Structure formats: C-alpha cells, structure tokens
Length: 304
Image (cartoon, rainbow, N blue to C red):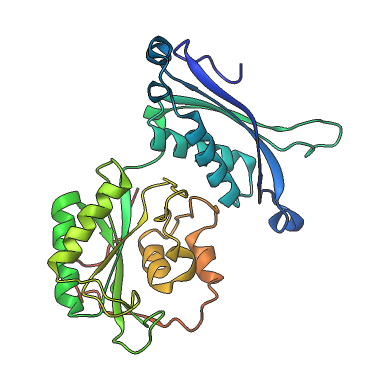
C-alpha cells in the first residue's frame, strides 16, 4: 500500500501505468521522451456495484486511466514532483475524488536502482486548484459595443476578478477583414462541466447577433473562449483545456500574460512569460489600446 492510509477501506488501485513523456532538466531530456510509471489509488464505495453486479454502478477506472495517459503524454515538466502534483490536482477536480494516493517513478533514472520516484497523498479539500477561469474575448464587428455587453453579462453571471487591456490584433486565417479587438478576463468558476459553461457562452455570443458562416475565421460579432479553468486539464474532447490557442495565437497568450504574469501552462509547465519570449508567429501583429477603451472595465491583474 503506497502513501498514507485511506480514510475508507474500499479503494481502487492502478499499478505501473507506463507512459512516455518529456520529463527532466537536462538538454537531452527536453528533446527525447522517457518512460514514467504511475501508480494511482483512490477511495470508492464498491458495495452498490457488488450488490447489483452492473457495470453502470462501478467506478469507471478505465476513464481515469485514459485521462491520466492523455495528461502525462502531453506534459513537459522539469520535475517529477511537479508532474505528480499537477496530475493529482487534475484527477481530484475532474472525478471529484475526496483523496488520492499517487506515485510517479522514472525507471532506471538512478544508476544501481531499479526505480526512483515520488509518492504523494492529497485530499480534495486541500487541493490548490482555485475556483477561477480565464476567458478570451474577441470581436471585429462593432467591437466596443459587443465586448462591453459581453463583459457586463459575464460579470453578472460569474463575477469579474481581473481583466487585461484591449489589444488590437491582426486577423488569423483570413486577412481580408477588419482587425480584431481582444482581451482576457478572469471570472469566478461556478464549477460543473465545461460543456455547460460553453453553452452559456454560446448564448452570450448569440445575443450579439453572431451567426454561423462558412468561413470559421471570418468576421464575427463576438468570440468567447475558455482559456483556463485554474489548473484543470481536459485533453480527450475536441474542445481542450488549456485552450490550444495559448500556444499559437498572440491574441490569446499576450492578454492572458498581462493578467497572470506569474502563471504557468498546466500541461507543459512553461511560464506564460517563457511562452511569450519564445513565441514564433512573428507575422501576428498585436497592439495594446488605451486603458479606457472598454470603460468601466479598466485593466487589473488577477491576484490569487
């Protein structure tokens, strides 16, 4: 039995889940994937499934294993300790686990040893995942009006915690249109499924008269995208968290960097400052506008 004693006698364990990922501090480790081994142990009440003998009443440990694999394969942390902490946080949030025992090992990492790794035990109530979400907003059709209305609606629904300046950005994917206005804002996260939040965002977009057009990169009244939900990671669905645009779109990364200047990418472990410094899409133009552009929503950094 790894780690501390569980608070319940019923639990599920997954042993030696072997996954390839980027992990380590040396130059060669940043280029070549290595194998890590994951052990998971989490409490569950097995009595109902045992009584009914129905798969529907059992814990879906296959889903937990797939989520773990997707997270680790996409990660690029320097330290095993960071990988273990972020993975535990993510599993606790996604599967509402009251606690988890987790071991991350690097087989053969230490000469003369079969294995070396870290073991952690975390409780749901102590998780460091904060109840906030970062949202990207954009418009190039009456942007001042539509972005102001969207911010008012989002503030009313969730509660505003911080927002960036408005940035004028060049169109991406279809150049024959007006420049966009973009900003990032942080709101309280109400919890629940990400799909439910996106449905609310679609309703706000529809209020501005947004319509589906054949060119997905064409002009639009309003774009609302969830960039982050704390340290939450969702990689299995078509809509991923963190948002893929953080890596490749200036209009998403730079406003977010402004309100989260010490923030890090939940999967790669890179700071937003590092990502901005290494940003390779030099053809994407971005210009910060006056702080009063979207008054009364003047810029303020989100303090956690």
